Image (cartoon, rainbow, N blue to C red; front, side):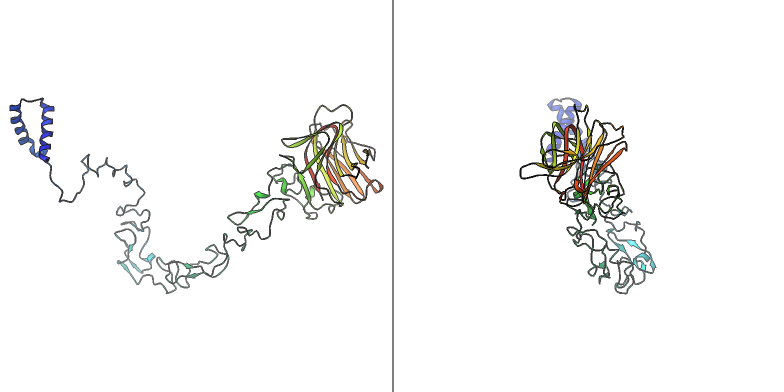
Length: 462
């Protein structure tokens, strides 16, 4: 069959080169061509011989254009090491003349010539002189990791543990760490760790100075405080509001060296550092404020505040949790919208607010009146508010759009109402004795009266 196919191919070639031949003439020329070029068209039977490959045969499976060529995954660009190219690569310990810097001496022998095994997976130490490394002689040599008491300076601490005694395995191939104890990741807080897994060592967001949240632990055994943060910084001092000991006054160092009570120096009562000891509640009015109730008028949340509108009637925005009858301070920061309403208008922080059995309001108020820029303390004993003292006029050129801050302090039978604004202007009023109820507990919050005011923060200190 092979010869018949070859003749067909030859005939096809002749027809292509010389054109069609007459039947009688074709047999003569075909015989002549096959005789002349027979050797060139002959193919050898190589079935019994070892194939050595050819770099010249374009159809050969090992040539430069084949799947095993320079573009193939087994070619010279491949990352697989090639044993025998005098280049130590990949998993090879050595390769020919490339011994990776090793000598007989580094392998624990006295001298001699180190060579590489033919499989590149180890050294041939037959040319080395000396006994070589002996496991058990307390001398770490050659490829030994350690040997008896010779730990090459290794300790449990270097191995990542906190304590214990490191030893050497009997075959000298590795350390024995069974007596080492404690490491980051074992789920137990030890060593210098702040925490380990769920073991926070009793720490919480509160112990870190934050008012709420869930403290976590990072994989390096340090605290992860992200669950303690509300991701808002009212005063721009770089301290998260929920962890700021004075959230409305910039104090990046969180100084609290007066009494170390949890209220920053900048927010202590100026005349008594021992009056307050904690930031009980802080509201930045970012997002929905869920801990509040409203009465009268309208209250609308803004990007970073809440705007109260009470035109012609009092409008309350009250924090739901009452303050007990203790010393405390309540503060709010606000600005007013323009133009002002006709007539008198007040922006107010209220405190000791409650209703009696007849639903009459009892409350105190520290109020700022926009028109005359006046500060006053008011009391509602169950019917209407009345002003206790004459107003204090604030000497300021503050704009309505700039921030204003009211803060009231209750200390026993004394109440102080203070004001400060963005220009630095300030003022204060005080009442005491018969003008202050014995029980000053109740809710605290905000009020607008014939005014439109945007409040940006609210704080309760205790």
